[in-house]
Each structure stands twice: as structure tokens, then as C-alpha cells.
Length: 622
Image 1: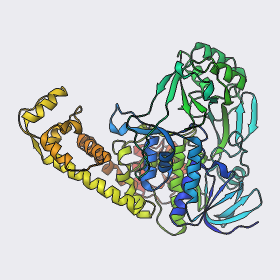
Image 2: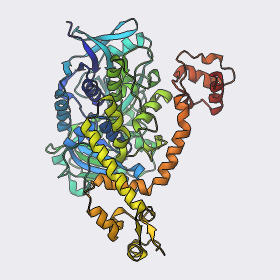
Image 3: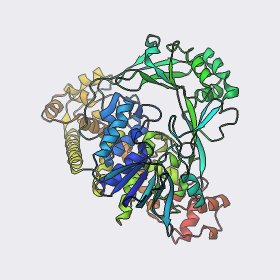
Image 4: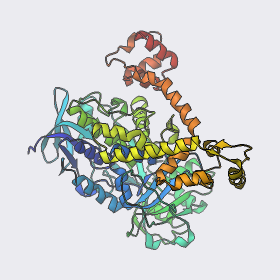
């Protein structure tokens, strides 16, 4: 069976595949999305939530560029929280609980609404090559589908193996078969592969939970959104609940350690450091008397609950026995037990910063196949891979993001320059320029870039321009307006801030840590100005952040300028590192292995010192 020819084929329809398909098709490429099950497009395999620390910033960046994860989340969320509000704005991170079933449904509806996108249900088993270039894929139904570029987003399905206690069975997700053929095909072509492990908690019947024994966790009183577009505002919310384990729970869990695949050697691959299983937590932190457990609703109407904090691969009888010793879960009924899954991945140092493979032209990897974990990280990679696949086949310049431009830039740069031997997860601490990479200004940073390549709409650009103009207008007013001490001091006294002895500019008051724009509005001149305008909540937030944190932001921008020169110095792809006699053996080995594209990338490879970079610059005539 030979189907029609396509510009781009996307293999896999999870978070990476869905974003890749949308991006490629919306950029004008004739695109085919192949998945083993059309009913699970955009499926939330683990927790029913989007965003969180650093991850929320990524979702806003995806949206600013013209991706769809933020829109789908806004349309299906059941609770919203802005995390880290007690810290500075660089740390503020949006997070939403989603309706799992509606999230997947909305993704499918969004994709079906894209004219250039076709769908096909089948398992891709191999690649079709010609002159070391991808020209299509082969499927289990013996179809050969030709394309100019292919994006692999296989998630946890490549030779997936599920573990529950001493039971193992093949699958990419519980109830779904694993994918075979691609790993072997890629290894034969010279790619290096590895194994990773992740896990998920049990799901519980909400009717069997006693919420009166737990602490209720409500969403924000004034919930915000992820998307900068006109998505609906969340009016009603569902609560989550928190409870705690105890020593009896820990003792019961230990009864299953001998049958645990984590401890008896059955699982040999590396799991996520920052999302450990409950058995791993009580083993590593034996001195802790309790651990948090969250009961999170799976949707508006379903009775199913996700038990966050109880990820496990212990035997199912131990799981239910231990769970029923946690307050609120005494009569818990399982929908399904927790499990661990091992799967194949390909170390991402084999990729360019476009996510195209170095070994084969027009082949791209995105998502967990690159050793990452998390919906948001996967979606970001899918977006970039889909964009670049579409741009390359049309002979256009590649689209990449620098570390100072986006968390997405940090993510991809970390992967291709450092690789990963454990599932990679994004944190704010990974970004050197996090004061500039805030969730509130993702549109300012990225929408012009998305618009320039044809992905972000003209409507988005007009909205951004209005936001910018309003922000600049108000900041100019605050900087140029003098306020008198007789009006200002009562406000300062109320906030326990030191009083002024003369007329001052309004911005000198707003920069004080405990003074807000709302406080300034108590001064007549400021009140009259703001009342005469119709500034959005987003604009008011921008004004306050830009005035209050101007010194920090400016300092960060200076550092960016100093380091950006290294990013502009390209290293020839055929550069012979073996001739560098004055660098360390480790540096030489790492440079040969990673083959960085720029001096900036080379400087971030672990084991390459500043002295090694200086030698490299000298050899390049710098």
C-alpha cells in the first residue's frame, strides 16, 4: 500500500507530535500525523495538569509563538494557580488542573480544524532513505508513505515495558501496545540509543475518598490564563486535596520492596530525579515521617482522581494496602494501580539546535525520545521541530531560540550541548536570564518571531503592539510625574515605608519593594491618569514589573550582550578537533563527540574550560 506524498510526516500524536503537526501544517506544509490510536491524541499519560515552575513559562512561550498548548489548556482547565507569588516575578509560574478527557478531545478538534493536516492510524516501523536523506516511513500495515521530512515523537512507546511489582508486560502506556522497529532501524543507521524509566501513580474512585480528612486546596480567586489570545476566562473551579503518609504507610510499602522492580534489579534504566516514586522517597529519605499526597480530580464530571505523590511500581496488593492507611483513603477503590515504564530514547547530543539529527538530513526528534520528561518540555520541542521541518523543505532559514530569548532555548541548548542520562526536567534555576524570561512577557519576547515566520497571527501582533504602547505610555507618565509629600506620605505611612521630605517622581516610590501600583493610585494625579485609561490587567502588571525591577533587568541585558558574541562565532562542521594540542584530553573528546555549532555551545559543554575555548578561538583565527 502506497499513500500520497507529503511535505512533513509526524510520527506520534502526544504533546510533541500534536504541536509539531499543528506548526508544520499551519506554516503551509502538507502534513500527515500518524498515530497508533486516533482516540488518544494529546493524551495526558500522567497527571491531569499543565504548567508549574518553569513549565508554565514554557507553555506561555509556546502560545506566544503561535502554538496550541495554552489554548487547549485554557479551554479545558478546571483550576488555575499562579505559583511562587511570594517570590519575585521571575519565579511566578502558572499551573492549571485540566479535564483529562476534554483536553484530549480539544487537541483533536484543534488539529482537525487545520486544512493542511491529514491523519492516519498505524504503527510506523521504519524509515525510508535515499542518499542518506529521509524520504518517508514504513508502517506495520506495509504502507510506504513518502515525505520530504519526518519528525519522530514516539514518547514512551519505543520498546516500552511496563512494571507492576514482579509482573512485566509490553506496552507504551497501560492498555496500549508498544512500538517496535524504529529503535532497531535507527541503531542500524548509526544512532546511539539508551533506556529510561518513568512512572505514574494509581487512580482512585473519588466516591471512595473521605475528603473531610484532607485539607482543601482551592484555585486562585482571580484565575488567569495561559494564552495571550481571546480564550475563555475560568469562572468556576474544582478543588484539589492534600493529605500525608505516615510511618504505618511506609512500613507497609517496605513489605513490597523485595518484589519491587526498582530494588530487585528488574529495572535497570534511570528514572526522573525530581519526580521519584513513593518507594524511592521513603528509601532515600528514611528519616522523614511523612510525605505529601494530593488528590487531584481528573475532570469536571468524572469521579476519577489522580493520586499525586504516590507514583509507584510496587505490587498492586501492596499499593492498595498502603494507600488505605493514608487519612482519607481508608476505603479507597482503585481504578488502576500505579506502574513504571521503561522505554528507548536517543541521547540528544545527536541533534542540531533545530532538532534535526546530525546523521540524517530532514529527520527530526522531539519529546521523550530525546530523554526529556513532562508534557510542556515535549510540546516545546514538537513546536520547534515542526517549524524547522516545514521551513527547511521550503528552503528557508532555520528557526532557533537562544538561551536569553526563551526557556525553550535553554531546554534545547541543554539537551544538545550537555545531553542527559536521566529524564530532563526544566527548572527556573537552569536559566541564567530568568529575570528576562518571565511568564508575563513571553509575548513581547516571542510573538514578533512567531509572526515573522508566519505562525503567530496578525491579530496577535496588533494585540501585542497595543500592550506595548499602553505599557510605555504609562511608564513614561510615572517617570515624568512629580508627586507631593502631603499626598504621598499618608500612603507610605500606611505601608510602613519611610516618608519623603520633598516632591519626587512617582517611579521612585513604585520601586520600593512594598509599594504597588494600586498604592500609587491613592495619589490624585496617578488616579486621574489611570482612571482616564482602560489598561488591561496584563498591562498594569507589566508596568509594575518593568519599573520595580528595571535595575535587575538592565543588568541581565548587559550580561547577554557580553556573552552573545560567542554565540555568533560559528565553528565549521568539519573542524578537526584532534589537531588542538593545547587543550585537555577530556575537552578534545567532548568536542569531538558533541561537535558544537558555535563557540557559545562549546563553552557550555561539561568538561570544556575557558582556557580550552581560548585555544579553540586562536586556532580559528580569533
